[in-house]
Length: 435
Image (cartoon, rainbow, N blue to C red; front, top):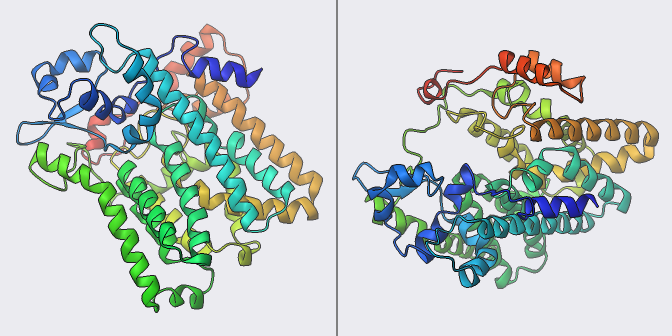
């Protein structure tokens, strides 16, 4: 019943169009290419305010005066097997590409990639010889005990579930490649890695998962002293470049530069990272709103021999925390918890499995009760987020305490919450001033 309600609501059964906010830009390549047939977006530039008011394209104007889509084309490509159906069969007059059938297609795509992600998590953990009960507990903890549930059911169509799918697929491929060294595996790894970078350029750090496979220095060094390995790594890099090349050509066509920051006016402040706020702050703190993820960090140091990605996890996760917390909008606008860390969950789920493998044997009842408590805490918070009581960008300690111990809120209590939220100053943040 719950799944049926979810499916009906998020596939448009309640008339909710999910092409909003970031999804507007991620989807923009599809209507630009297949409906307007104008990737230069001259039509947008001529009626910019009209398209912006209608929630379409979210393009920026480059210094040379041309319109450029803010995000990269990766999600439009990954959604294409689903959005192709309304493109073919939905033909009302004045078609824009932002109608409800396209929203339904994007919701179906998100559901598909979320389900396939879980399937691939199970496959990965089985390859690493974890028990069925450790795998089952990890799946529950991951899917309903963290902010994964928000981006597979509420915030549909943004990059994080897609990136999760790509990275978990790449980890499975890397294990198979290390065993067989097949050419087709190299090509697939390069394809998936290229898509990861295309979706979010900061995902380039996950290239370390290819280079630093193994949990000993000897295993890692061994990978760099074989001509076969070097040539296959080069093949992966070429394949990844081929995937990214259309984006570089698009930037050259629109902005005049092969490498272009299409997030005009937005940048990183690497000298002012908000690491503490990013992890423990009440606005969006990762460990505050997804506390169950902490068991993954504990579990990383248990059964290290089972985890060939142990070293790379210790590299990628802190590095991504630093990068994300240095972004001008370190809370990443609207959303729940540290949404840009979902990309790391394929690495961290191995730590989860190790945790459950150990403690479901050593302290079974305590582990079950604590896990159940944090899962229920997460479900409660997600429901409050869905109801806009846990605010998408303005929470603070006072609002967190006020909402933590309540389930139902009267109109008066909701009005009171509006007076205690800490609304961020986006313009000041763009200049590096902390909100």
